[in-house]
Amino acid sequence: MVKKKITIEDIAREAGVGIGTVSRVLNNNAHVSEATRKRVLDVIKARQYTPSGAASKLARHNVVEASIGLLLPDIGNHYFFEIFESIYRKLRGLGIDLIIFNYEKHNPKVMQRVLDAQVSALLIFAFQLDETERELLKRRNVRYLYIDYLHANEHCLYTDNIYGGRLAARYLLSKGVTKPCYVGVDPPAQANIDRYQGFSLELAKHGYPPCPTFECELSEEAGYEIGKKILNAGQFDGIFGYCDDIATGIIQAVREQKTAHRVVGFDGVRTTKYLNLSTISQEPSKIGTKAATLIVEIMRAKTEPSPITHCLTPILIDRDS
Image (cartoon, rainbow, N blue to C red; front, side, top):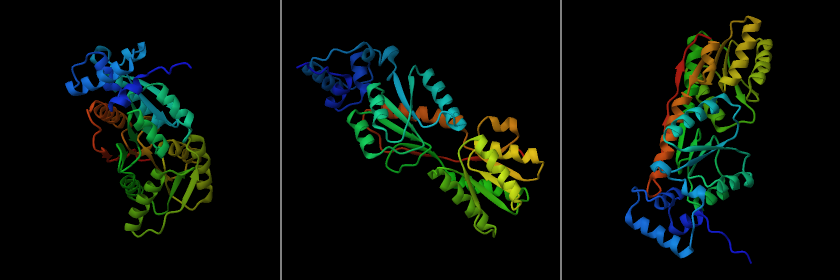
C-alpha cells in the first residue's frame, strides 16, 4: 500500500493552528509564540514531514501568508469586479497572492479546489456557505470572511441595504416623483429584499401605498428591456433599480424615449459617473480595501477572533438623473 503523503494542512490540523502559522514556523518567522512553535515542530517531527516547494514559499519575505482565495459567483457583475480590483491591489501591496474561484452554489468540487490550493484564508462574495462547507474549512483551519452578506455569528462585511433603500426613496421624492416603482433582481437575493423593504418604508412614511415591483436578470440588457416595459405602461414617473447594471439599461430606455422619468441605481460603480446616473453608492473600492485589511487581520490572529461584523453605510450620489 502506498503511504499517504503528509501535507501542510495535516500538520496544521494536528497542531491546532492555521496553515499560515505552520508556514511561519517552517520559515523561522519571529511572529510565532515559542509554545506554538514547539507544538508545530513536534508534529512535524512525529509525522516526518518534509515541506514542498509550495509550502516553503508560504512566508517568503516575512509575509505572513502567500495566498488568499476568493469565491466569486459572477465576475461579470461590475460591482463585484470593482471590489475584487481593490482587494487585489491591497493584497499585492502586502505580497499576498489572490486566487479566484468561480463559485457554483454548494458544488463540492469547488470547495475541494479551494482546499487543494492550500489557501491561507478565504473571502466569500454575497452568499452563505452550507454546514458541510463550513466544516471542511474549519477542519483545515482556513478562516474566512463574508463580503456583502450579513451573518451574525461569523466574520462578515456588509452594507446597510435597508437604509440604502430609504435613500433611494428620498431621492426620487425629492425630484418630484409621485408614482415610483422598484425593479428587483431575478433570482431574488437578501439584498434585494432589504433594499425593497427600505424603499417601501420610506415611501410609507410619506403616505405612499406599497410600491409596485418588477423583476429582471442582473444585466444592462435586461434592465433596458424592463425599462421599456415600464415606460410603455405609462403608470410610473420614477424607477429605483436594484443595482447600477439594471439601472444603466433603464436610463438608456428613458433617454431613447426622451421621457421625464427619474432613475436611481444602487452600488456606485464607476460607469455611473460617465452615464450621469444617480446611485446609492456602496463605495466598492473602499469595501475591497476594508475586506482585504480584515481578512489579513483574521489570518494573523493567533487564535480565531470573535465574529467580526462590520456594517457599511451607503451614500447618495445625486447626478439629477
